[in-house]
Length: 178
Image (tube, rainbow, N blue to C red):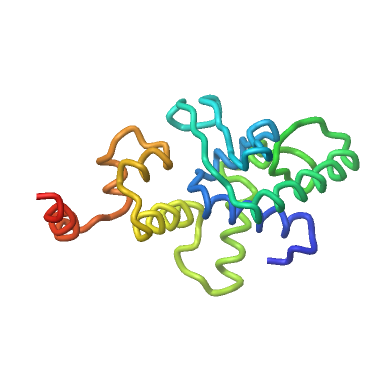
């Protein structure tokens, strides 16, 4: 990704955000500046932007926080140039929110498809980034209940399907608790 352009930098930040937080692409598109607490390095989401209408608080690391700060500064210039007024974190090249187009998929999703084609990558999409987040948590020892909460799932069953847990893996993992 060419981080020297506004769109390339925006896409880089969006991909990192999805990979490091597991946020859905539509939630990323609805993210407003008020949802980011740089004091605590957290993303604080209200029910209006989440699929399950619940609230969610997710940590972000210093690298991602710094990139989000830079993006917010770049957004000011884009809004000024196109005379748009909004507080979206992820903007289209003309200063609108990325979910505000006539298309069913947003600008980040379209960019991911373009990058996957350009680099010859298969199965690279927003959903794959969300699954990678969940799988990474599992591989680092997080329990399914914690992963479920981080993903905003109402049911542990949804999360186990999401993680594509093999029945043998579940049985062996449970054996440790007998």
